[in-house]
Image 1 (cartoon, rainbow, N blue to C red):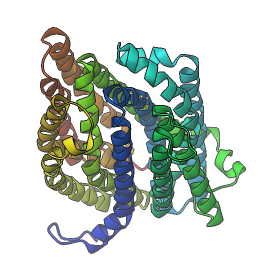
Image 2: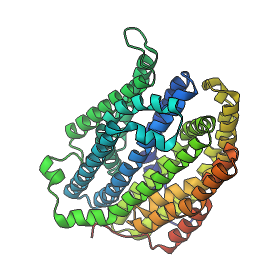
Image 3: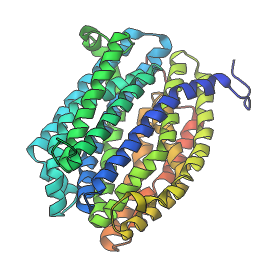
Length: 452
């Protein structure tokens, strides 16, 4: 029985809070620790903060490909969770684990063979490239560990158990912050390693995250924690079905993240100062974006579960409710960026000109949050949970490549525009994307049961 259109659905909001709150807390700690990392690295100067930022761009590209793989896994896990089909949950986790680790080894190999080639894609500053090389060679050892942790973390959230990945993430991030402080500055008996110390701290934290995730999952015998034959004993038909639904998501995230990489490369070519401001903006905005991500992740689980149960009308009602909720939350949390922009000078040891550029970017982003939040919800929380991966992939990247990237490139290379103008060009794709996704939501064509 569907609730009245304007009734307050206690079950929906209770379930949303149960799933979203640990994810928000986990992401808040993650963003806060990352901000501390940036602040600590920022004490070393503009070159160090730019070098770590460029190194993290390559990691972001890797991360988004993994997110595509695990999102494809999440579609199956959430819907099979609605059917309480534990075997297929483990098989979906196993496929995701196999592909993710292979991808992580490929990215590791690229860094170990030629880190300078990667860095030169983003910047031609020899000081930044030299500093970034040492950082990447160390941090790349954490890639397989990150892949393992990401697969298990998302699978656990998809079976409505977000607390375990939250605990693992919070502990590992605190470890990361501690070793950053010890190794960047050389506290006590620890050597002063600069940004190479930040890389080593990241490696240690990912190892801790994996140990905690696997230990708790197998001790409590949670649904994704299967034996090797359960994880990897999937049939060819199941693997083909997984890839048919998951491949568009992987391609989507690969193309989208490459677009983000191009955005970073364009901003870096606008100058080290412009890129430092862009990096600071991303670090600060992550503190508020976590609320929208929490809702989006929770929506994917709840909608996917209802589809798996065969309750399509409730799934559609949940999607509409989230589509109304997220823009409102976007307005509220986006407003937090304005006062946060006034605090930058107290935390970042960079020139006043860079602080001013970052403030302009954050204040513009305030007005974009309702659109950005709606688009994120529709792509990752609604369309993917319903197996509508091809349409969401097209909507996600179309306007980026035909509008925002060309505009940003023209503004940078032809007109040598200020950083804020380039940033506005980068954000311009969100309006067309929002219209495409709104029409898809109302059409109901995104609703598919991928378990059949």
